[in-house]
Length: 359
Image (cartoon, rainbow, N blue to C red; front, side, top):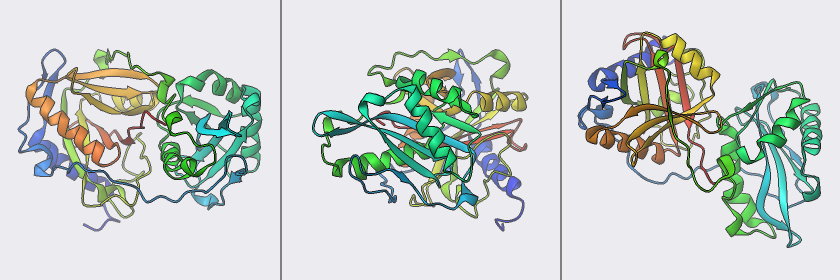
């Protein structure tokens, strides 16, 4: 089928063909009715391997890099992402390097500022953010930030700026940039300390003691299915785009990933598809995680909220392991589709990426 015609039918047909083979019913007390392993993803299982992205990066020394990247402003969105935190670098061998990083949701715009360690406060963060916005041709309407340890400071800093501040793990472009810098930039800086890497990630805690709460009864799906879609469908010319995802969102896709692999996902089928999709859009859905130890399928939202979607029996636990394997193979990439039934267009479709804990 030509990629320029009937895009909605294209994504729907891919989901429906696979879902018809592996659709399964759910009751929170009993879990899924198990699909067979052979039918999962139409036999297309993603191999488990490490995929290293060939990403461009900005070379720097700890203090000299005060950058605002030249970009095509026509591609810059009004959804921006912000991080303010210390990096694994000691300045003059004794003080931590603090940075403010800002990017838009497409990753086309990037700006970086260094904060003196004695000026890490909401007033200084606000000044830096205002300065970056003033110098930018496209102004943000929303600024997302993911780091729980910096919630109060960033929230106060943004409260006096004319933007909507959203604590959210849907900071996919920012996460990609931070991974670049952790891999390619900080290790080359004078004062780099590898032992400081990965401290204070999402939530800023060493132990995850969160407990998932049940979804409200009115929002539960009647059927769920583990499915897969070709990665090519999310690349330029593919069938999944902003025109056919309802109230959902698509995170940036690393173009170096192999187009012939399958992105793992979950289709939720419910007569209340519009209500559930709207609720997910409002809660900043960040991803799905199969906790194999607890035998739970969990939805992650906002900075640290979790909702229990299903209990997994032995068969479902094996299928969930394949789902997690597929996520790992593509750097956390996966999707959620909410539909009324197999023949309906998605009320909401989210392409998501699980943000690493060690940023």
